[in-house]
Image (cartoon, rainbow, N blue to C red; front, side, top):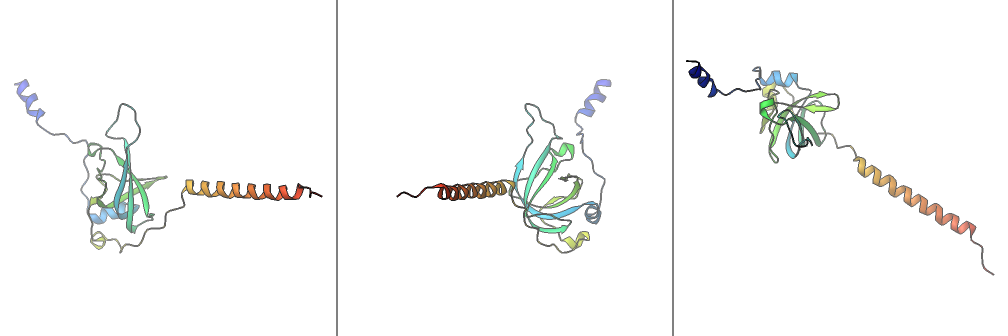
Length: 171
């Protein structure tokens, strides 16, 4: 009888993630930022030989509309690696309506946030019409290249000026 009871439980699927049912308007109210965009890159964390379903994945979006909060044209969001840990499993090239929370310098979403593949009428979840995302800030690498280039040009100009000033005319 004990064996029968144990085997009965083996066929039951246990989900590690369960969400409290909420309406779209509740998801929108809880989110710090809501936007529509297409996934362009998914980066897994470097974890060595072991990994967990909770490891944070970094997902880059090409944002085309912002409905709540602020987002740039290129925007990064994180989510757990797997749905088993409430992570939203994004696919590169697919468009999503993302409901996310901001925590410090991280923007995070999950299966319980209301994020969904495809689109959604913002009015149906009590959001205003979307607006364009902000421009991306200049890249740190680009700024470094500009500074180095200007510094090298200034050094060359100073060297050329000093070279003329100290040269002695020949007779």
